Length: 79
Image (cartoon, rainbow, N blue to C red; front, side):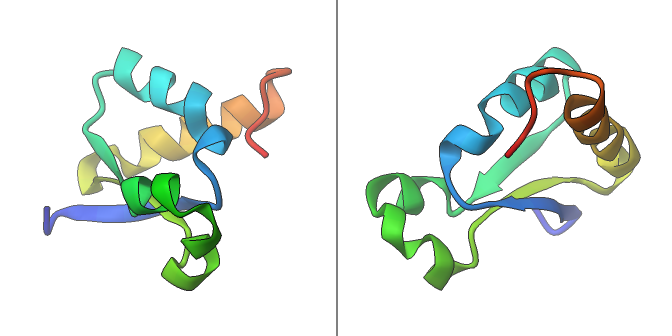
């Protein structure tokens, strides 16, 4: 996992549900750091620094493009 970098940070899991689906459709390797802990203890989000979307370095540009498209070209925005 040392070649994975943080691309985005979210406060709660519901903020990236659609993004997860899009990443899976594109076969992009990813994981959400702190997802389980914040799912169990939602108020720990600020203390842990949120939920970090980590992707492989080679996929960084593509993931940023997906996030930008989701925010600008869709009615399904990431909060």
